[in-house]
Length: 496
Ligand SMILES: *Cc1c(COP(=O)(O)O)cnc(C)c1O
Image (cartoon, rainbow, N blue to C red; front, top):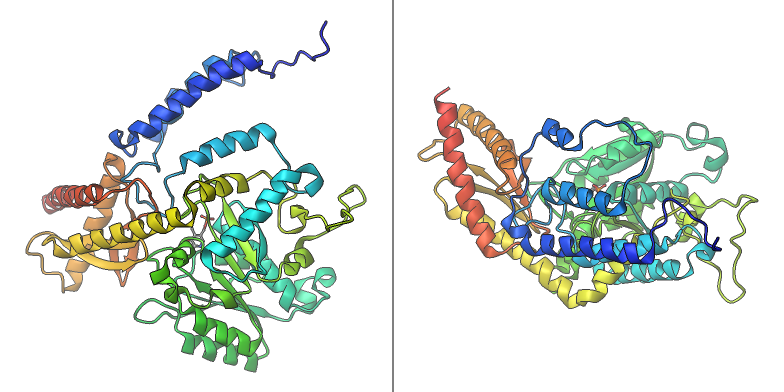
C-alpha cells in the first residue's frame, strides 16, 4: 500500500507524457497542414452524430490513450476550422497556437480566479492583462476590469455597472420598478443584439431601448441622439446610458465617439463603447483619430477572442472607475474569508462581475501579447485591414461583382451576373436571393467560409478578416471561387 490514493481518474506521469506528446504531435501537424484542409467537411448533423454512435453512458472506463486518439480524430477531422486561412465568417478568429498551450497550462494548474487567495499568481496576471489591454486601445489608465466569456457578457457587465452608477442608491433593495422611474438607454440601429438581451434580462423591457437612426455612413446620427434624449427628459423618462459602436458587428462602422461623449457629458449619462470587434484597431497609429473619444468612455467592451486572436472564450470589460463594478457585483457572505493583506487590499475578481468561480482566461491573452508585442499586433491587424481592402478593390474591379462596403477588416459585396441590369426592384430581389443561395452553397462546399450582411437592402456576402493566416493569394482565390460558384447558382436559378 502506498501513500497515494488509487484513483481511477489519475494519470501517471509516464502515461501523461506518452499520450500528451501524441496529442501535441497531432496538434502541431494540424496547425502545419490546416491550409491544405477544407474549411469545413460539409458533413450534415446526422453524419456527425453517426460518427459518435448512440451508446449509453458507459459503466466502465477505457484507456486514456484510446480516448485521446479518438477525440483528436473526431475534432481535427470533422470540425469547421476557423483557423483556416479562408475562414472569414461572422467575427471569429484563427486561434493563436500559444493560446492552446496557455489553456493547457491553465487547466493543469486550475486556479480559481474568483479570489486572490485561491489564485495569487493568476490574479496578478489577470490584473496585468487588464492594464495591457487598456494600454493597447488607449483607454484611461485608471481603468480596471476583468476577463469574461465574450462580447455579450462584457457588454452586460458594463451595462449593470452603468445602471448602478446612475440609478438611485435604493435600487439594490427596492428593485427597478419601485425606485428608478423609467430608465431608458440609447444606441444606434447597427448595435449588436446583446442590447435586446440586456433589456429583457435586466428588467427594462425592449421598449426602453432608443434605437437611434444612422447617417449615410452608417454611424449613429448624433443630432437625433441629442433630440431623443431631450424628448425623453421632457416626458419624465430617466436616460442613463448611451452605447457607441467601435466597429459595428455587421459592417465595422465606428461611431463618432467624441460627439457621443460630449452629449453624455452634457446630460450626465454613462458612455459605454461596444468595441467587441473593432477597438483593437485603435492601436494602429493611422487609426487613432477614427477612435477618438475612447478616453471619455466610462466603460468599454472588447473581445480578445476576436481581433486579438485568443482561442474562445475571452471577452473583457474595462471600466474607467472600477469601483462601479464593485458597487454592482460585490457581496460579503460569512463563508468567504478573502480579507485584505496589510500592504495591499486584495483583488477578488468575484466582486467585479457575474461569475463566482472563474477560470483563467487571462493567461492565453497575456501570453500572446508577450509573444508578439505591440508591434506584432499592429502588423497583424494592419494586414487584416489591408486584405479586406484588397478584397473590396478586387470585387470593385470585377465585372461580375459589386463591392458594397468596406470598414476596418469587414468587406461586403454581391455577385452580379454578367450584363445584369440591377437598377430595377425585381432585379435587386433576384440578386438578393441569388446571393443568399450562393452563400449557402459556399458554406457547404468548404472552400471558403463567408457570412452575410444586409446593407441598404442588399443581401451581401460578407468577409470579416480577423485571421493572421490569410494571405493575398487567399483573397484572389476567394474572388475566383465566388465568381465560379455564382455563375453556377445563377444558371441553376435561371433554369428553374
Ligand atoms: C461579436 C460582437 C458582440 C458579441 O460578442 P460575443 O463574444 O459573440 O458574445 C457584441 N458586440 C459587437 C460589436 C460584436 O462584434
